[in-house]
Image 1: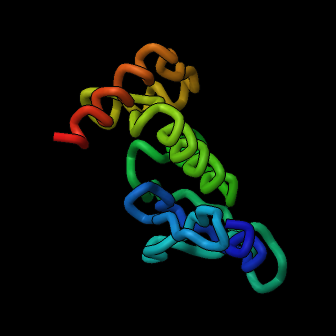
Image 2: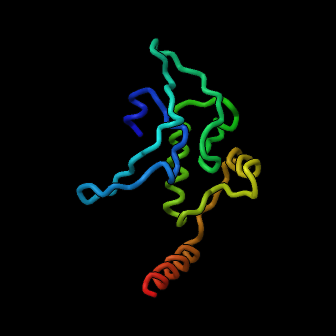
Length: 132
């Protein structure tokens, strides 16, 4: 992620399906793949490029992308969604029946992590099923 921003480019479709974890020296490293939607956010003259295209996976889009004016920070938002999923057993912070509902909730920005009881119950179910 930092390397991409030093190169003055952003991914624009950072999601679980476009990343994987690689074990390295006892730590998990998050690797980003599929740079098909990536672009530069700084031009050759060092000027900020105005980004307006709404591209990417709906559940990972930052409010700035939805509003049609964004910069490299939209990738940080997407990383936050992935982090949320790690702590909530794969759930999204902003759910909805359609994209419009998801976008409305993302713009509002309010979310809640599942309770410890919910997480513990789910983990137990996963462990029980793995032994069958």
